[in-house]
Image (cartoon, rainbow, N blue to C red; front, side, top):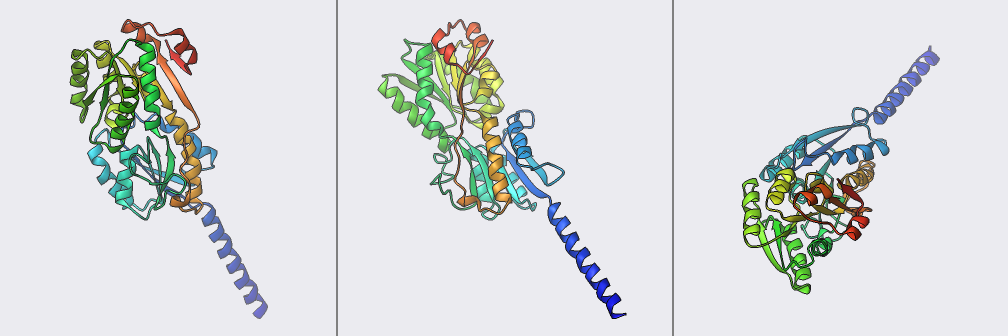
Length: 324
């Protein structure tokens, strides 16, 4: 009788342990996603989903995604971040400097993996090797690329003496980029005409004022509002026959003349490894921030033809992609 009870107790323990292990194996991690754009504009997330799958993180199997879109309303990011932080997610993924800031302000406990334009210039971290607190991710140092974008404008328009810069002056990282453009312009004896865009209605007037001032080339500094309206922006520039250069290929694909910068899909894919590390127990603030591994020059030849611009053959030869 005692032996029977002993065997029964052992069976119950084995069943309990096996059940606990099975539960551990099937635990679903909840990932909150804070995005400044809309579902339609966030095509770069394909890279994230591909990267997650490569890391064995499958939605519906061992992860679930809680997505919040700001739909271009940057002022909505803080409240959306608070909502995500209060929903019990295990990790927050963010895209863009403003979303990263909003997430950091909303929580100091939940780890954040951010894909950003420039985490240093935006003040998100003070050190890439050891970001500290609860944030890590993938960041380009966009300000380092603005001199190259000015060179591209000069290569297309060799006699240009005045260049416009369209940006959001209320954004810390955008102003850091403007300072880099100013430094490069001064070295080339080029005058700059900054044009502020704080809301979508400012886009048209910004290009009109630039054209009226005799500007034929404009550097557009990335901002979520501009990204969401990139096709509209490209149309305004084309209607004024203004050559444009952007940070990311999505702008050139939407009709902008040129883009030079990292591939955002690749950055999102890269961030999936960091998400896996955090979900495996590593502290986000102890994981070094990574930088993009691929930069690309994209030229929209159709746009060039539309504004009557002959692109230098040497520049076309260097392009990673030419849209015709």
